[in-house]
Image (tube, rainbow, N blue to C red; front, side):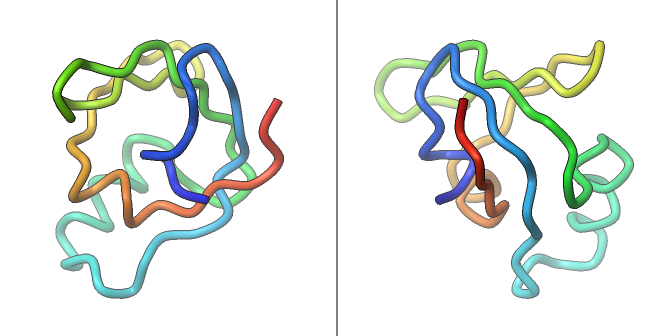
Length: 77
């Protein structure tokens, strides 16, 4: 499962980043807190495949499908 697959109002744990991501993108995701074991909550899913709105700690971010599909997630709650 990936970040893109998390339903609205559900949470999961980051389990890894795809090695196919550019190093600059990987570094930015790590700076945002998308590290192994970090809890992430999907606040909202935009209509028509728009970005997904995520909460990591006290911060809120949006990610497009092309990036969110490359972040593996486990343990939905």
